[in-house]
Length: 154
Image 1 (cartoon, one colour):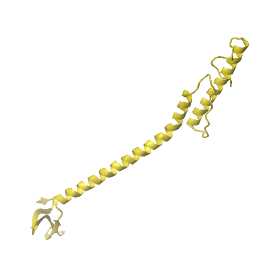
Image 2: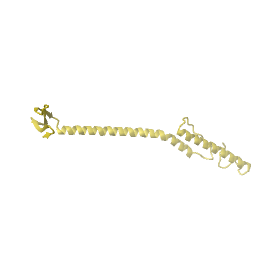
Image 3: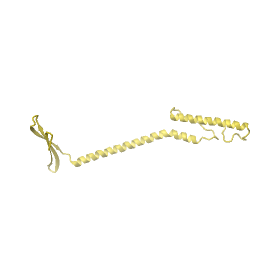
Image 4: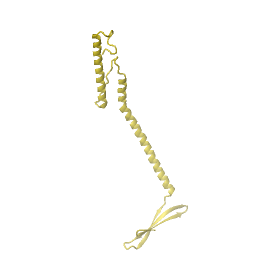
């Protein structure tokens, strides 16, 4: 086979029970005269190459699955850490009642959750003030017998 100005010959050869491919390439001088032929034997078998490729792909898939599982675990842990304060605020908001004393939430950090907690604390503080004012109004007008109905005495 001639490729450009080089000659290439590919041949399957055998030694004993084993077979291999040999490629022969012509080596030329500057004048274009053939000085020698170079033999490049290739001893790897096709089955060995397929096994190596299969092993590489399986290793790649295993690493991908392992890293995906690790990433999913990290995401799960961080999502739990992020939603835990929100779940606590949600539970406290469900407990807000006009007929009982509502406790403020203690939060030390000044972040977005802290702003939400501050708004909640202001809300229950205003609710307590409005309830006391309503109780006083009803007491002045003698509309209530045992204090204001529906409001705790904060």
